[in-house]
Each structure stands twice: as C-alpha cells, then as structure tokens.
Length: 208
Ligand SMILES: Cc1cc2nc3c(=O)[nH]c(=O)nc-3n(C[C@H](O)[C@H](O)[C@H](O)COP(=O)(O)O)c2cc1C
Image (tube, rainbow, N blue to C red; front, side, top):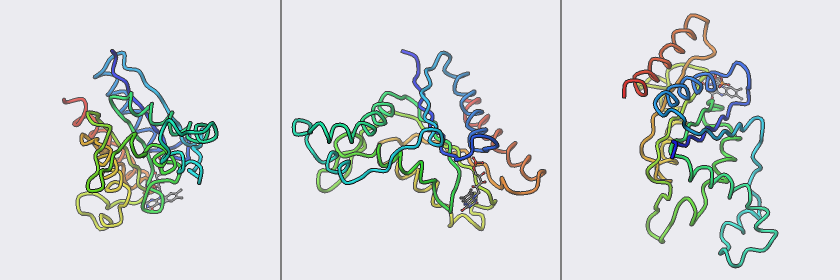
C-alpha cells in the first residue's frame, strides 16, 4: 500500500501564503521519502467547512442504530473528514497564526474531526485518542517574530501548543512543527526566516 498523506491548508490566502509555500517544501520532501504516496487535499479557503450546529452535536451523541436520515445527513461532513484522517498515514497541516491562535476555518475542520467514539474515547476518567500510529507535520506562519525559542512572544503563541495538545489528544504523538516567523517584516528578514524554515524541513525530513 502506498503511503497516504492528508494535506490541510488553512490560510485564507491562496497566493503569497507562507504557510502554503513552506507546506509545498514539506510535501516535496515527503514525496521524495515516500515515492508514489497518495495525497488527499483539503483547502479550507476554497472549500469552507461548515460550523457544527445543534443537530450535528445531537448526531455525535446518537448511537449508530438510532441515527435518523436527518442526523446522518448533518454528520456527513464529519464522517468524510474522519474517514480521510483515519486512512492517512501522515497529516500535513499548514496554517497561519490569526489573532494569536488558528484560523476559524481550521477550527471548523477540527470541530468536525474530533468526535466521541470515532476519533477519541472517554470512559468517565480518561481520554483515549483513536488515531494512533500517524505522523503529523504542522507548518505555522507568524507575521511577527519572537514566538519560538523562548522569544518575547512565546507566551502569546496559542496556535502551536493548542495543535500539539489536540493532535496528542487524538493519539498523534509524532508531530513535527515547522514555524516560519516574521513574514510581515522587511524583505531581507523575510528571506532569512523563509530560508530558516526550509533548512528546518531539510534537517527534520531530508536527513532522516
Ligand atoms: C486576520 C489576521 C490576524 C493575524 N494575527 C496575527 C497574530 O496574532 N500574530 C502574528 O504574529 N501575526 C498575525 N497575522 C499575520 C499572519 O500570521 C501572517 O501574515 C502569516 O504569514 C499569514 O499566513 P500565510 O502567509 O500563510 O497567509 C495575522 C494576519 C491576519 C490576516
């Protein structure tokens, strides 16, 4: 079976997006490492994921045998998103930081993915992630610099810690983050930060 990659792009920008560009670098390295890999793509800017609503939540908590046609219809997007994630060996998520966290487009995808009995279980005491054995690569583009390496903005990064916890909660422990910082700085700084991110990809993917 060829390796299966699920790529999720969350930037609202289709052109000039640093997270998508560095995501392309990661994708090329993954394809070099796993020749013939299948890639499923979800572009959350092109195809917006609907927010969960009252009926979606009822559907999440309704046992399979009791699902009505209406509940099945309203949980179909969630079913598809979960099936894509389950069949992937590798997740590649690219996202900007928006307002110190992730874009709402990515959160809408997460709200359709994280579902009791499907992608996590809860026995009243502890949680079990139901997506074990997968790898994830997460590219995050930040407009400002200083989020990594205990920089002055490290405490304001609610994107990376959230995604790190969330993926671990689902059972995905093998997560590589590729930050690209200071994307709104002067051109020389931007070029330097982009090269740093590319180098980061080379050392974490091409070396292994
Ligand atoms: C709505 C919005 C909110 C943003 N919020 C932040 C922020 O909180 N911190 C930051 O460093 N940059 C912020 N930025 C800048 C983006 O993170 C930066 O432009 C990044 O490169 C966007 O990702 P992209 O290049 O993949 O589109 C924001 C940009 C937008 C459009």
